[in-house]
Image (tube, rainbow, N blue to C red; front, side, top):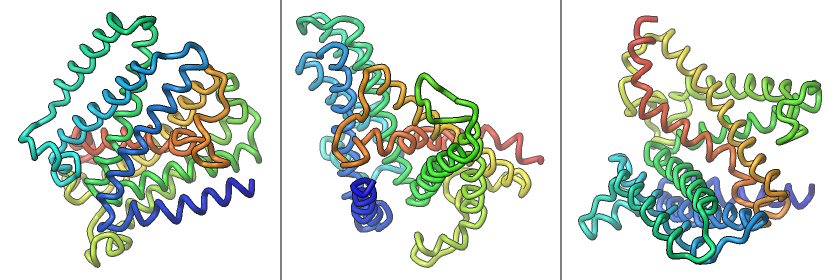
Amino acid sequence: MKRRIITAIILAILLIPVVIVPELVKVFEFLVILLSIFASLEVLNMYDKERVLPKKMKAVSVICTLILYFAMVDNFLVCKDTLICKFLDIFDFKLDIYLALGGIFLIFMFCMVFIHDLNASDVGKCLLEVIYIGVTFASFTVLRSYGVRFIVYLLIISCTTDIFALVFGLKFGKHKMAPYISPKKSWEGAIGGTAVATVLGFIFLYFYRYFAPLFHNGSSINFFDGVFGYSEFTKPGMIIFMILLSASMSVCSQIGDLVASKLKRYYGIKDYSNLFPGHGGILDRFDSALFSSSILLVFIVYGYILSPMLSGV
């Protein structure tokens, strides 16, 4: 426990400034790319517990993960000033997401034919790794480009859900939620964690204009300003949206945790790696936040679908 607490403090000291300080945004982008590579290797090395993958295929999978990551980031206009987009601009090249997916598919088919002792099951597992890591880490980078407030909100939801799911589970947990995946998790803990996270998430969203000067050089803005037409919502509609968003994010945070846990249980490992003493690997520490980051991005990009329903509330 002591080692776990020390590691958490060190991570907080190192990561909080990188995430929040605008001048360190390039460091944040580079760090996310680096962590995505390590996370890819964590998943690929996990597969070795069942059947050892050829090193060539692991290298190809990591490269394809970065290709998908780069393509996804490059397809968001808000990311035009990121390291990735600046690098691609040097060659006057636009990495289309559909071209990237098609290219990855062809590369994997090529590998299945020409890499010895590689079967369709291996290719399927590697494709899962590419999509899982590529999409979630890219979502994290895109959210940071939309604004640091989205990362802060994401972390509030995921951390609050984890903490209070444990608290409520220990105090009231009687009904196991997924005993074959994570025996300690209960429905009481899940509901309690979601309830607290929804309340805190809603408070952060609704009163963000009072926190905004901390992130916007003294300016006061609403949380959703500049994203898309949230101004079309009525006030009750906006409140409903904030509650639904926070609750959905909390639920997805727990699903992300369970997905990572099921993979570990299936392959018979306790942690993805020992990168963070007392915490395990990257996916052990950030599984819920990474998974829910892609869900938050979906809300931002496609939330306009809710406008007709909530504009008249």
